[in-house]
Image (tube, rainbow, N blue to C red; front, side):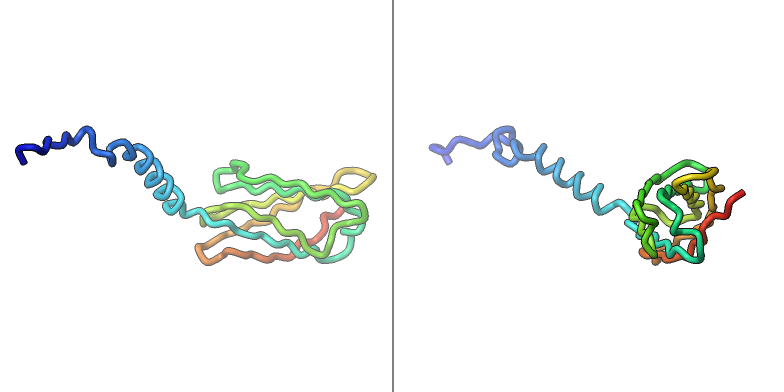
Length: 134
């Protein structure tokens, strides 16, 4: 040990890599710690009246009434038989407001659907009737 110089802990090579290792560990913790699931909400368009619809807008609101997801779909020749909406939502109760607009005429009233999601509800499929004119 006489000829060998004692190593200082401040000069250890691991210390230079420590900030990067902490950043990676924190990123993994945040990524794995997220309990919000990606869910797929599938709406089967039932009944008559959908062929005249050119635009459908979905607004998902949480129990406090805050807007958490909004998506608009447009169609040239009416919507398909079903519409799918993918979003990250925690378990809870939601209101889904569906606004359907035709090519002409007065705007149609919105449909409000209540939706309760549990941990096991990754894909939820519901029927949706076309709004009727006022």
